[in-house]
Length: 533
Image (cartoon, rainbow, N blue to C red; front, top):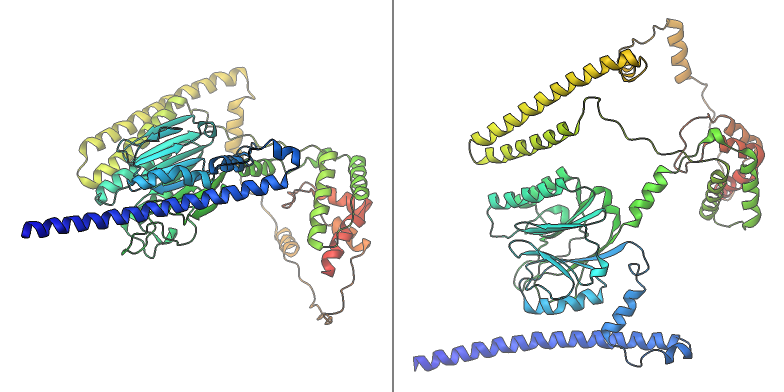
């Protein structure tokens, strides 16, 4: 009897498990059916919008894959813009998540998938995983990814593409603090060796208020310290939970860290609400590389060389722009149009200033010293880590020896370069030796002695005194203030000094003086429109 009851219990549990799996399968089928219906509706709308000739050339039936491919063909990636859509998610070793991942990537036009606890290696596309098979990066279409370098370690895998490197990480919750710190230090060592922009994403199994958690635990603080040392910022937006398991409180273990200089290129960071078969919600975000290059171009090429200003060309370009444009009604639009016209006139009347040359190294610096310095830094980091767990006698000896070698090579290089300078002075008295000595003398030069009258004149000029000003008359709200006049504009422009750094618009003061004297209405119209609003 007991055996029969036990068998009955096993059968009932198997039936319940099978029913739950069937319900999950029905949900997947329903999701795919909705996607199919949506794709057919979009295809029908596109066929209805086309002329009859184009409709006859299109197939009467379009599958969801074909419809999604059609949408992707008009995406910025296909049009040549440097935009990638990345997806981060923990698949939790789930078969259903493995089956749904390609469809989710297709629906959201994802180019690169940064995965954790993947179920299996996909057969299509470009795929790389770490040594423990817990972190991976997958690109379904090889043409979307141009990998220049890649590698893997224990708990992390990385790929480099042009100026961007993506690291996928998974730090297990079962690791001790020491093991967690060791993996984190390996990731930090890798990040320090990488040049260019960096994205570190994955499941870190940690909490911190910086990415939406209620509290910050020890693991989260260690991640924040690593991010501060590497110059990374948290790209997470909001406090929507990414780990959701029935009966458990939702948490945010999935993090996206990005280089501070590249953070503005991470856009539309979103936690997806789609069913994916895993207890982690996937994250998507757009990575655009065009913004950084455009910003750098504008910043380095904004200034013009006012010494080579061609006044006739400047006035001619301003007159041409004024005759070809209509006057806007809005003050904001008026400012934008006026500044654009002035920028075009400056570009036509004078060349731009080239960027500054990079700073040179000290005269005794060599490639050998640079390499030894890197070795010394690695030995110091190794000794600092080993000292936490013990005496670290061997690591300390290696670090001490690396410092001794570096110091010896620097002294030797200084001596050799000094001898070269001595020989060079006899042949070229105005060479490098003369420049070094001149800089030293200039740095030690004493300030000039000033008399009491001179000092008083300086103070009175910098901090002038004036009589008390009378209170201004109250102006009713309906009464408009008087407009600026040409005389006021010329008087204000006359106070501008030449050879001074321009403002955010980059227009030199020399140009503003010319415009105020030759074409004052260009500036007066803009100022008076702003005054009226």
